[in-house]
Amino acid sequence: MSSVSAAIAHALKPIAPQIFGLMGNGNAHFLDAAVRAGFDYTAVRHESAAVSAADTYFRIANKLAIASTTYGAGYTNTITALAEAAAANTPLLFVTGDAPTTGPRGWDVDQAAIDAGVRAARYVVNRETPGAIALQAAAHALREQTPVVLAIPYDLAALETPEASLPDFADLRSTPPSPELNSTQLEQISQILSKAQRPHILYGRGAIDAAEAVKELAAKLGATTSGTLLARDLLDYDFDLGITGGFATDRNAEIIAQADVVLALGASLNQFTMRFGELVNGSATLIQLDLAPAATNPRVDYFATADVHTAVKHLIESVPGVETGWAAGLDLRELRTRPAGEERASDGLLDPRRVASELENILPKNRVLVQDGGHFIGWGSKYWSTAGARSLTCVGTAYQSIGLGIASMVGAGPAAGDRTVVLASGDGGFLMGLADLESIVRTVASGVIVIYNDSAYGAEIHQYGSIGLHEDPMLIPTVDFSSIARAMGATGIKVESITDLDQVRDWVDAGAKGICLVDARISTSVRAPYMEEVLAANRKAAAAATSQSD
Image (cartoon, rainbow, N blue to C red; front, side, top):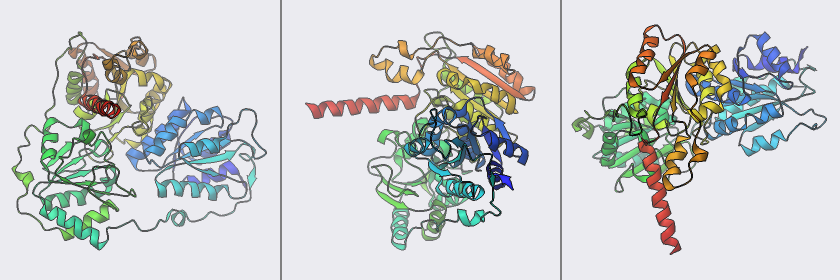
């Protein structure tokens, strides 16, 4: 017989052999069993990082990972990261300790209520079938694309279990057939597309696994294509416009605005992708195909719930091809042109656009980008190229959180293979996760951390300082992150002039081994275009509210 914890580890090893965790009373027996069973275990220094790392690992590797912490404070420290995974529909398994079956102690909290509050599914193991319950939890995570909490009551963790066999995981994971377009929907959408003079396909994360089919449909229609932030540059297609929405180039936006039909595939069409209503012109027809039960943006003219891959294959068969589409006649020479910026802004500090432009040519090309949240997100996303699916993640954006970027880099390490992991962060968010800089240095073979250090919470400066709110709560004393990096065993480079970036080039030329932290002292006076769109939308909403009250 084996212990409850050992049975859980035995059941999960073939399903999710990667664990990110921090040991405490509630998960000590599970982690002991997991390490003895040969799991790939990465220790983190703050519990929140365990969940964010597992989240990022799935987004890049497309494989289920396990996060593990103790009960109580160890569990509650993860809640922001757990809420982010739920909001982003990321499957992960969170194995955590919980109150004993005899009832809560003075330091226990109602973890079941908290799980429900952040929309995370919950399974509680028992002594009789712990392995089977663990497999059910893992199957639920993958089937429903959601984080699942697997709770181990404290008094059961080390007890022996009589469990002798496990269910077939494939049977547990089986799902009903994916929804398909019915004949009427297929005919109606095909008619709209066949009449389009200037069709455009906008693909999102839900279309990643359908990339080749999307490319084939675009070629048959003579359409242009573009991707959302999390699916950018997915297609190797001559008329792909790159990233769309708030991080697009001006030329990208000009072309999409000319489209008379826009087909959105697996894209949620949030306010940033839609440029607050300005992406698609008012006379165009917007079609959305998604697994959601209803349209996710009021601008949508025609919606159908459907698996993107299957729907696109059927559309390829039903729409007539064109010899020469509008895409072939477009001038795409300025498509990827972005303002390079000046070396210094008006306050004498570095222009973040120039820093991003220079780093695009310095950073290793074979790279994965991970981003924290904050104003700076408008620079790396816009200026740094990637190639292929799942090469960029922004853990935190679904829940509008900052501070999860460091943990994202920890999770990206084992998922990146031979690619260099590049993290973009602001100084505020980086300070929140600073403990796990040690985890990055210890576990990531090749990585670059770029801190856009403006001595402030930049998003707040631009969004609220610009309308007159007092800026003192938005400011941060300037931190020398390069010195902190060196103290932890990384290469630390303080960048106060563009020529300082030569040190980054030297690090890359030397083999890009270990971690290089770039502490770029940037100005708050340069505002990202997406933030301009946010402010314009806020002004519009304020004006509308004022007119209604008059």
